[in-house]
Length: 415
Picture (cartoon, rainbow, N blue to C red):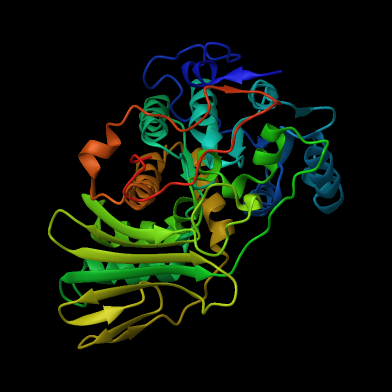
């Protein structure tokens, strides 16, 4: 079984995707005592997201599950059946293969959780929205400009249908971040004049290729290390910090210049991504933000944001230093759960809360940094976002697939 990108994006083969007039689905599902969740992507993040979702609303149940790989599907289903038995109602609605996501969408669910590798996110979001489903989607939401534009379009479609979209940028739902950034925006530390953000840590998991794996299977199981699947770690992981800076500014940057490379993780198991990035972003008002991210063992770690104001500084969540000092002293419930609380609040109140554009812009902020790093050129937002070049393979099927070349700054194009 294979699926082409055209089929994914156009929705031509989607099931139950009849268009509804604007506003026809407003308030859909808000009166249902039980909301049926369909999980697409049953790896570690998907299994975590569904548990967080069930914790957020006791009227939610797992109704259907899908994954490309049957072993991951079975493992996740067995774990949920044991851990959340009262909210586990999957029955035989367990689907594997390239078309599993379509079967989940068509299974009678109300809410879709998208937790596949990011390269698939725009395609699956489009079909979920066309089918009239509310969506929680993990971040990042795309790996290239065409994918970002698709997410934004799907977000606008969701608004017309009264559907809710929440993304996995959990800092947006952290009480301390919300309080602190509101104070920054209210001028408690003066004007924002500069920002820094970091996600520097050691290495992550990897999957070795076995003789039984095709190239495609190995890449998807080892998805962190292929740009077409993860976007590179500046996109897949560092998006959290970049999103905070965009949140503070209320805008996205207009340009990026980056210095980055692949110095330590050079083994083929690490695919074609880099292991470190340092990027300078500039916003339309002239404020510059310097970001750093690294995945190299044996180095010092730092995961944080630093906001510089004309009258003080802040870490964007627990404190403001300067003339108007402030420190967070309240409780901080788990933001991974709170983002799902926000999802269900919107569904049950027919609010139509929608994070598609903000997470798309933060994702593209990271993509723009990668493009600047891979090419060695200054990349401007307006030019980059208009790119029609997709890095996702045109056809997806199990079989041979060449590993994309590692980018060489000064020689590679702005992918």
